Amino acid sequence: MLQVKESFKEILVIEDTTFFTKVIHSRLKQIVDIHVACVDSMAAAMTHLENKNADDVLCLSDMNLPDAPNGEAINKLTEFGFPTIVFTGNYSAAMRDKILKLGIIDYVTKESPATLDYLASVVNRVIRNRSITAMVIDDSKTSRKYLSSILERFQLNVITAKDGEDALNKLSDQPDIKLIVTDYNMPNMDGFELIKEIRKEWSKEKLAIIGLSASDQPGLSAKFIKIGADDFINKNFEIEELMCRIQKNLDNLDQLDTLHRSATTDYLTGLYNRRYFYDMGENIVAAGKNRGSPAVFAMIDIDKFKNVNDTYGHDAGDLVLVEFAKIIKEKVGITDLPARLGGEEFCILFAAADPAYISDFFNQLLNNICTTNFNIGDQTINISASIGIVLVGGALEDAIAASDELLYQAKENGRNRAIIDVGSTTPLSTIKGPPGFHY
Image (cartoon, rainbow, N blue to C red; front, side, top):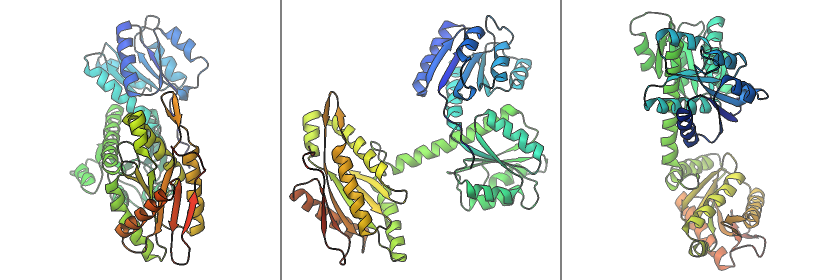
């Protein structure tokens, strides 16, 4: 399995113009949660970086500094392996070629306010790329190595494949790949057939594909797009163009992911929302019935939550909801479906679970809830929850109604407890949380 790069620990701005430095520093602090340091010369930069790991620092450097007027600082930074973005006030075709040959990530010209927007987008992209895996597919070892070096310069984690069959095997082993750059002419399985196979399982919302070819065959780029690629570029590309294409396609994936999350998750807690729960829940229930192992549904309600809002205010109530959701997230498994149904009401749908597991799960959950300190300003409170748990023997709606009834019984019987009814062969049981904790 590929070792994914760790996040940057620092951004170092190397710029001798005080105003420009302040503007960049301010903008970076708006978009990233990483320490930003500033120095005004090559000497100061070398001193600052002396004992730092090159993988930990992203450098943003002016091309011309008082003690390095001809790009000497850039040479030093790239020589020592520090990922570097360059900004320059003097742009020409010759300057562009010189900068790119230094092995930098990108360059930004000091032309207008739009410069800061572009710089911010590049920094944000480069930081995100550290958590993204890409695959380069080409039957030429030389081409694979060259393309990989470009993607790695852009801080992506890169694996390679020699043809389509090799690529499918590696994609199966590492399904979290977000970007593929593939050649057209390859033995065993060409780029077209590969894309067709990939799109059977990975949609454009999950994976971006850029086609490559040295051929000047008419309509080649159009065919790549029509069979499922997101983009195409001729192999006689400029490095800068490929990087722009990569940034555009990865930004598109981010936007699609943001739209998906906003449609499926609760804005406050990050748990799945009511709509997504019902959409996915029906599928989970149906799958359980087909394999003869019914799902289990639990309705969870925070006890006396109105008192929290009335005493401390709704901001404090929101904080409690967020922290409560974290407790649930940390406890559920990957096959479980947790959601916030509304207000202080949460739920979990288990794809399948035996009674012993359910009992142990909710015993631990009640303890985790009761023993968590919720910090509200300079005060600390503890809360409890009431839970109703049922086997989903029929429709999901019926199970929800039945669990709601058990939850009501839990409230009536003293709160801070779970009442479990998971089938006729298992008697109704009650699990109580630790005494003296609920608000």
